[in-house]
Image 1 (tube, one colour):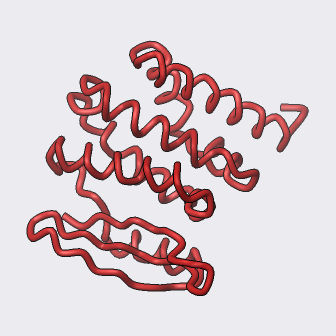
Image 2: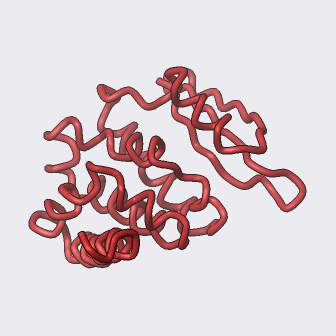
Length: 166
């Protein structure tokens, strides 16, 4: 299993990609300077497999949550493709719907990603986000519900700002 994590390495370096092999726990770091290169890595198949174990998904979700919380510049790196990859654990209903910790980490990460002005549109345009947020409002913990409500509001507002006369 390969997991791509994108982040700001430092002020001197631009974007880093961490590739974690879930079988050997090897971690490799590569650098690139543009979002298209990172998106190309995803298109080449370097992604979390939907059938990865629940513990791998929870670990990855927790890592992404910590990165989006600690490093605001990390949030700017998420495009529509990356948001879709983040939501993959929801493809296995028994995982994200029944595991409240996983649901909370993913919804909170989506909320963190939606904070930068440029990302509101990315989150709002992802067709999977709104239904998952609404489900989290119904089934999540109080923290999950709070973040889902705030993220839903941001997404609706971003869509309205795009087209004030739908």
